[in-house]
Each structure stands twice: as C-alpha cells, then as structure tokens.
Length: 303
Image (cartoon, rainbow, N blue to C red; front, side):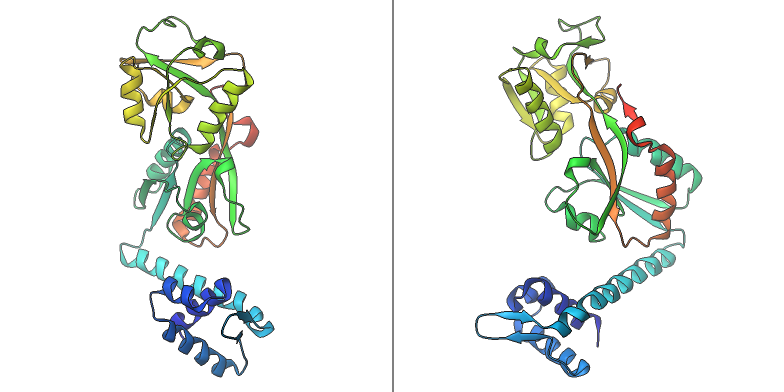
C-alpha cells in the first residue's frame, strides 16, 4: 500500500467516477483501476461495485475511507513539518486575506513577528475561486475574510475577529469637507466607485442592501478589482467610494477624505478561518496572537 493508491481510492470514493479520479491525480484511468485492484487484494474485500454505467462504494469501502483520509493528511502534515525543519527549524505560516481584511491581521502579524522573529510569514490576497479548498487544502494556514464568506464545511473552524463599519471616501475638500460623518441619503445622487462583487462579494452586497433599504437607486460609475485603482479614482473626484473603515484608514489623507455613515448600522462581521486538521506548530503559535485581539462581539472597528 502506498500514498498514491490511497489518494486514488479517496478520489474514487468521493466522485464515484474513475475518469475524474484519474484527472484529479494526474494519472491514467487504467492506473486508477490498478491501484484500486491492488488495495482490494491487500484488504481481501471489494471496495467498489462496478458496472458499465455506475460505480458504487461498498460498506467495506465506506469503512476504509475515513482511515485513508486520516493517513493521507498525517503524511501531508509530516512532510510540512519536516520541510520546515529542513529550512531552518523555526517554521513558516501562510496567511490568506480577502481584499477588505487589512486592519486586524496587520496588528496580529506585527505582534507575532516581534515575538517570533525566526518564523517566516507569507501573506497573500485570498483567491476567491475555491475558498473551501484554500482553507482546508493546505494552501493557507489561516484565512481572514467576512464571516458570510466562510464555506459551509465541517472541516473548517473560525473565530470572529472584529466588526467593520463602512465609510464614504471622497476627493480632498469635496462638499462634505469639515465633517466627520454623513447620512447615507447624501450620496443618493453621487457617482459610486465600488470594489467588484467578484473581489469583495459581502461588502458589495452590504452596500447594495443598504441603498435598497433607503430606496436609493445606485448610480455606479465604475467597479474595480483592486483598491489602488478605486482609491485613485475617488481621490481624483471621479466619484465616491464606500469601503470598510479600516481600508479608508489606509488611504492617504493628503488626497482623500473619509466619512462615517451616521444614520444606520453598517457593521460587517469578520473572521479568521482554518482547517480543523491544522498541525503546523508555527500556526498554533499564531493562533495565540490572534486570540489576544479577537474579542467577538465587543471588538468593533469604526463604532
């Protein structure tokens, strides 16, 4: 028995399709069939009932599946730890952040880096394509994102880190200058510059729901896949942006002003999510740094 046989067995059990299992494991269909046959000979049982049309996992196959997954995960975790030891022994953590998650991870990373200077921290923008796999598949140790973006998956755990409120960002000295807050109704006739729904789905939906609540038909001038382009457009006076307050805080006050929305609660819950089977020793240390700041419903930014 080897890891390739178990990986192919797991793929067949999950898809009930030998062709798909072959594609997922980058081998031929005949190789998958041979691996399954070898496992069946080793265990002395039939793992799948096969016909020309259907593949059905047997009771014996169902019993083997969780053990196979555990073995594969254990070996994967062992490789990670050994590689970390080989690369210096102090470890590495990988963090994924959705484009609107900035403030909370920043201070956690700063504290962690000061306490554990020998641990490498890799930070990347979170890929929205397959959030479930990104969290549980080993690409990231932790992912920061709005709570409503966390996939429904029993293999994922999360902790509420903070709440973000929305702010309006305008060019410097725009008509709201000198004020700290504005009413949502005051942007009813403004040209809106927003982060795209594909990049920031929860923030985009919150803004649309907010406008609908006040019976405002949005006048969307442009949507952006990156913060820099949106900020340049807003600071140039092309339109106004509505973004989480922490992002507004990152923008230079030399070119733009930001305003709290005063007449409605715009808070969005944010979390840190991770796979239940995480075993990276460095990641477990980072968890403690996060818990220092994560205060659940009491930890509110912008309120």
